[in-house]
Image (cartoon, rainbow, N blue to C red):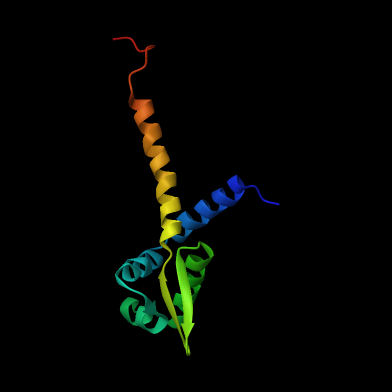
Length: 109
């Protein structure tokens, strides 16, 4: 059984991996405005459905998007709680930076 730490670290790694491609970033930017079907995403991005399906699969595996089927179309939307996980991870590093930049008693003036 995986510990929560391992599960969280895998989730964070998958999230940042998914964010490492310009097409996936563009998909997320489009989904910031509203839920979209695959056909609308293909049109907006100028990519084939097969190419987009690969990127959507990566985003789904990283839990960054939700999907729902309506008839023959699949609609995608952002999964905001997963973005909050990534944001918290980065915020923790911001706090570390503040600690490291604070003057220490060992520094010579």
